[in-house]
Amino acid sequence: MTIRVMGVDPGLTRCGLAVVDVEPNRRATLVAVGVVGTPADHGLDQRLLMILDSVETWLDSHSPDVLAVERVFSQLNVSTVMGTAQASGVVIAAAARRGIAVALHTPTEVKAAVTGNGQSDKAAVTKMVTKILRLDTPPKPADAADALALAITHAWRRGAVAPQTQGGDGGLTPAQRMWAEAEAKSRRRTR
View 1 (cartoon, one colour):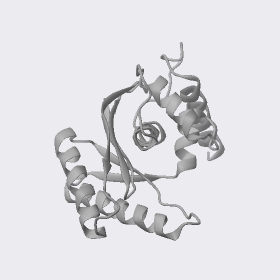
View 2 (cartoon, one colour; view 1 turned 90 degrees about the vertical axis):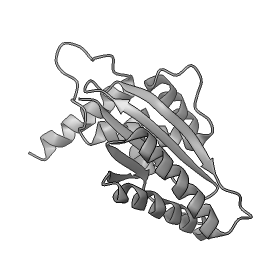
View 3 (spheres, rainbow, N blue to C red; view 1 turned 30 degrees about the vertical axis):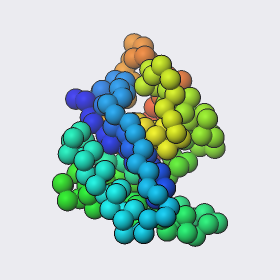
View 4 (cartoon, one colour; view 1 turned 180 degrees about the vertical axis):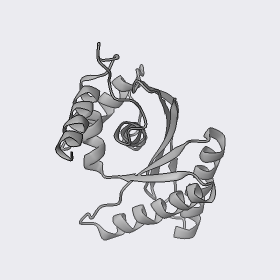
């Protein structure tokens, strides 16, 4: 069964939003992608309200099965972390109001899922997202590509789609194959 995942790369200045459909064979298809921008000269309350309104519109328009949000992590710039955390909070609350499950993924998890390397840069993530989704042009800005990567990661990581079966790779990219192999190794170690 195809799963619809909405990915959100939270931020006060730019909040990446993306929706993908992922089939049981892990084939991902772009549904929508965009970025909500808020002006720095607006008050925090107005900026969060702009993000909330946009996210609610996306949730109502696209009816995702699950929402994948980038987990806030510590950075040197405390004000950036606070803004990201505040944006994440309104996004998570909007999903909770609709009964939509929310999953959090670290940037390292996302990079590893999409590129096969948790230390990849944004250019590598964008390149693989473009390939995985069979897009003619890379999604821009990076916040949009990151939101797409979050959605893809969640579908692949949560086992929401079937692992590859015997008799071929099902058209998986090298990163998808590496991710499936890593998941299989992890399952074997925990037995």
